[in-house]
Length: 99
Image (cartoon, rainbow, N blue to C red; front, side):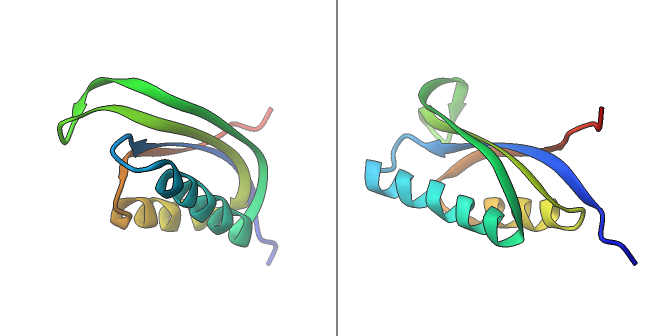
């Protein structure tokens, strides 16, 4: 059986209440997790931005966009880890359409 590799993009928002070192550690943690389970195509750190609405009394977040290729079962695990990681305000993983 051939493993299907799909292309995905994920955007996650880290709480601005985190220090610069904590923010860097979280970005590195997720880059390492993705690299261990797939291939990173690009990482675009948008930096601190104002949120559309406050989340847990936080008005700003640190945005990171990652494009990657991985097996079909990995995005569910990535979302699970986002959900249990302290400091992640929001996240989304989207499968990119093949052209």
